[in-house]
Amino acid sequence: MIDFSSDGGLQQSPDQAGQDVEILKSGLHILNYAFSNEALYEGILSVLTKIVPFSDAAILMPTGDGGLETAVTHAGRLMLRVASPKGAFARAVAGEAIIAPDLRELDGWAEAAEGSTAAFASALIVPLESLDEPALIVCVHAEPAFTENHLRALRTFAPIAAQAVQWAKQREALERHRDHLEELVRDRTLELAEQKERLAQALEKELELNGLQRQFVSMVCHEFRTPLAIIDGVAQRVSRRHATLTPERLLGSVDKIRTGVVRLTDLIESMLDAARLEAGSLKFEPRPCCLGPMIDEVCVGIRELNPKHEIVTEVTGLPDDFPADIKLMRQVMSNLVGNAVKYSPEGTHVWVRGSVIGDGDVVIAVQDDGVGIPESDLGRLFDRFFRASTSTGIVGTGIGLHLVRSLVDLHGGEVGVTSKVGEGSTFTVSLPRRRSDQPGMEPDALIGNAA
Ligand code: ADP
Image 1 (cartoon, rainbow, N blue to C red):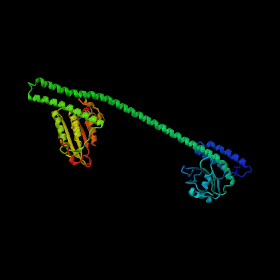
Image 2 (image 1 turned 90 degrees about the vertical axis):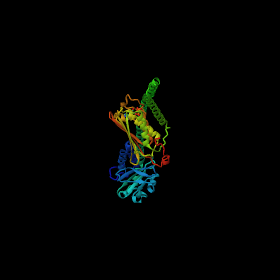
Image 3 (image 1 turned 30 degrees about the vertical axis):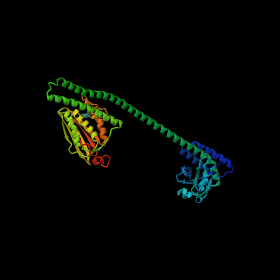
Image 4 (image 1 turned 45 degrees about the horizontal axis):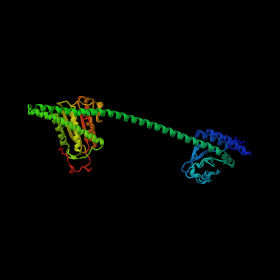
């Protein structure tokens, strides 16, 4: 039998086989502790205290880069990390149990123990069989130093400790794997939910767009029919009464026909540009150009067709070499001024103002006293086919502003709107002055003086 009574740990006994059986019996007990690292180490310590007198104990584990590291320590003083095991550690790793009555003579200990050696007098290092490279170390502060008998007892215990550590490691790996799987499932579920949400949104948008497109087609038909009916009606009247018509009335009829033709032309132009934009075939050719005269020209055209509106332009301050695509900017201005007139009662004013700010950037504002736009509609105003609730009874297709924003985007600019129902709206286009070293911006490429 092993005598655990004295404080010296295991005592010499004539029946070493009996001791071993006793050690194995208490050792087997610790396999039950393998469910957590702390519990396992507690178990190992409780057996160690019965086998050897020690002040500190540790299990060295492989680090993965060829070194060894203390995985668990007793009092936390053994700070061992052996980069590549040398001397005594290399021997222990290779399977040799080492008894070191005087630690100062233990080869490689001093560097590995990082200064904690001073506290210990001697050590036992025992390979934990069945694990890759770990070793069990116990140290004692003072005499009595470890004996061969202690070493033998520890070697008997080592395989069981190794098995328990192995199990604990496997359990840990399993837990990590389970956590990883759980994480994967969580991520995937989240991903699927997001995908579902995106699909639902896309479907909703598609359905909405389908509805808007149908609405658009019927509106376009109406838009085409109205000016055509006006043109036809006026032409018929002129044809019937041409003999009696005064020159003034004849001129009035011609004006009405022109209004209808211009409306049709604008509509076709907008639709073509929108289609080109959609197909990615719209040409953007910025050149230094005179924006002021172009805006004046657009306003003259609209004024001619809407003589009861007062269109006031203040655009003389605009530069005559502003880099822009004059054709596209004409489309922008004719949409904005056209809308300002269309959504305002006759007899009201429309102001078109242009100014230069900052480093030469241009701001153009179109302001009217018209029906205005509800705040709740402002966010969708530039969406394709969208029409505000205040447009009821006024013909339109909902593509003009979408086109305006896309064209201003091409210029690297921004378009904004402020509005109040019943009071009017102001649309503001801000265009940045591009660098003159950009292609197509050379001064000799000056074109489009609103001619
Ligand atoms: P539309 O052909 O309907 O005029 P737009 O794309 O040009 O299409 O304009 C979209 C909507 O924005 C219009 O239907 C109208 O409700 C609103 N809107 C645009 N400009 C004005 C304005 N100056 N005053 C009031 N509402 C406007």
